[in-house]
Picture 1 (cartoon, rainbow, N blue to C red):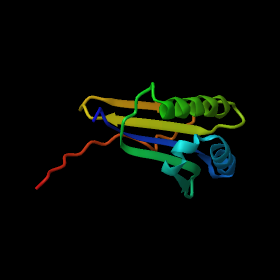
Picture 2 (cartoon, helix red, strand yellow):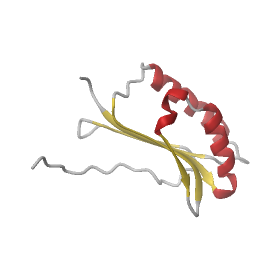
Picture 3 (cartoon, helix red, strand yellow):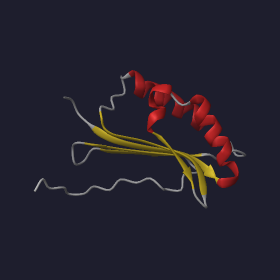
Picture 4 (cartoon, one colour):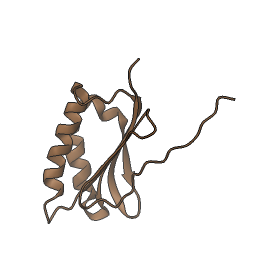
Length: 121
């Protein structure tokens, strides 16, 4: 069984720099996780959204290690003054107070947690 989380991450930039973000993600994102990527392309930003629901998101797991390594490399580029790529990450765990949020300096706060109450009847 194990502890489960919902995870969402966004990698994006303003539309004029979105193609570079998409190319970087296409070439460097972990292959095992690429099936969870969805393109972002609207009037303001362009890039990719990563979403994985009901997943075991343990820092010691190979997929999470690969994801975190990708994020670290992405952020090295993102924080350069002339590039200004954005990264946002939200993980919601099973416990009501288990919410993790991370953002780069250029994030527009487009990803945010929202808990809801569900019923089975």
